[in-house]
Image 1: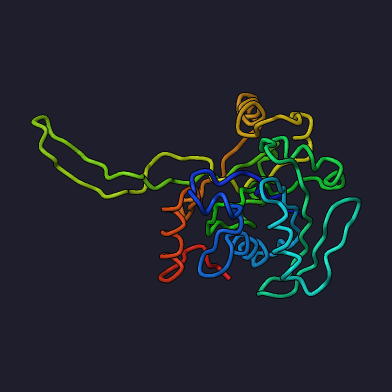
Image 2: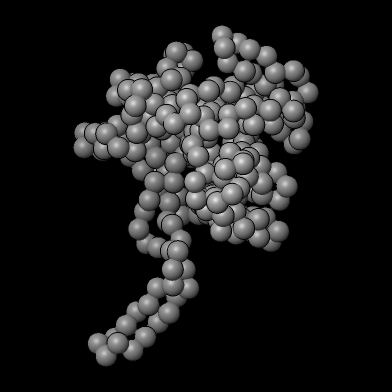
Amino acid sequence: MKTVILCGGRGTRLDEMGIAVPKALVPIGGKPVIWHLLQIFTHQGFDDFVLCLGYLSDKITDYFVGITNKKGHENDGVAVCHIDSDGLKCRVQLVDTGLDTNTGGRIKALESLLAGEERFFVTYGDGLANVDLQALLEFHLNHRKTATLTAVHPVSNFGILELDGGSAVKEFREKPVLENWINGGFFVIENRIFERLESNSVLEREPLVSLAAEGELIAFQHPGFWKCMDTYKDSVEMNELWQTQAPWKIW
């Protein structure tokens, strides 16, 4: 089963780092975030990846060609790397899906490449979690929907106050985990999704909205760790976590 990773976007909120380095290559503990993401999947038995490239695609290609012990080659215009080094053992296909293509359009560009797949994982190239992928897949198969997303609890960017009627602070919680669920990525999607995608589609808009309206989208609730590298501050925090607990390190 293939895993599609969306890593073509611009890291506009990573300041200077996002200009020089694609988000997928921002380091955590000396390894790029994409390395950590591949470890999460390969450790759980999923080792066949398709990366949707865009911004600074050549840098991501150079990284994978550099760590492979077999020379990257072209297969129908797609660079393929068979990696058995740097702690990874997997197959990675690198597809340039356009500089500013939206998320749904990047997946649509893979339609012929994924023609033989009944279903596939899709996730974002900047999010890490200790999600149980086998349980996610089983959940998806049991519910037989077009798509399953992983719902996660975000951590507040701000401290939360609870006030009484006289404006006295009854409780102060510094950046708590919120009770709301958000889309954390880590999708399982049936091949029929391509019927809903166009070259300019934003996956999180019309395709997922229409699936939800039709009862064809379901959420796998993951109460464990999840964090995305969206800003420079996130990069600092993830590097600090790597030095202490690194909750996503399940390998």
